[in-house]
Length: 398
Image (cartoon, rainbow, N blue to C red):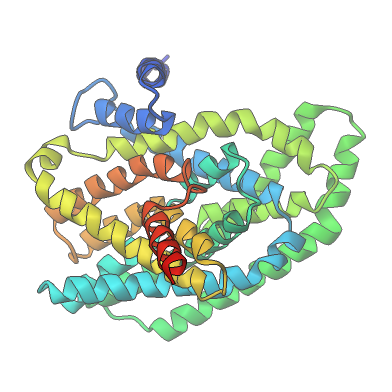
């Protein structure tokens, strides 16, 4: 019997628990502990974990379970209530981020193709980190939480056209209009199929399953539904996360959504930790040390661009500035799908290996900062307090 999988899990969990204990003692968010565990176990750092590919598979399962549980806590009716946020807020956030990034990097002397590509990877935020933290803090149904979720959902859809346009930027042949048309047809077909399943198939199936009075059978049936829909979206070259979210929405339309949440919650927390660990495993610490000043520059660059774009997009929805700035802060990190996109850009020759590693370093730093930002979202920003104090003094003197 080959015991390497068991040995890898033993090492992975052992190191993770030790790091989390230290983080808990130092009052550091667990998410940072997961990232640091990944860096420690990376093939670039040690040889403790030899099969990094297995961790990446577990990470994908974690993202699927996360988006599935998000879908369970929503429904198609709730989604319709935020469709304006998705279509207007999401599209503005992605467009403005690409525009700001492209113009600034092009002004630094990079080619227009590379500048646009960096706009692509910067536009996406981390669904896994933001949604998990907001769920843990019970903030997903707040005014800003709904906007954040809407923008993240739009970004998850946009990964497909961005992936399609990347080879075109690299100079490969292709007709973007035809490919975008195919994408819209696929999304429309998935929407119609989801509506049909939620109205006529899944409720009746789960009703029959509940007659068995077995939580295990209900769990197996739910896994069957989730994997079936995610495989369908993958077959259509859409994201797995989008398929998982749709599966959650479908079950949320039934009377058994709370039971599904209670069944999947323990699995979600286990597998989502694999996602953050796998992100840390991508990093080469040697380039991080060598290019640290440049990494700090790009860290500040990305934070400023994403906060500005997110705030502007939300403010265009005629929401209060505080809410808009809160959304901008929450979306100020690089997302997990950006890693897929950056790897595609590396393969297409749009970016160099060094630029790719610098991007990974900056991305992991933005992810590490995100829990601190999200835990203090409802606090008034210091510069807003400063402006209020100045304005109050001015009105008092007049």
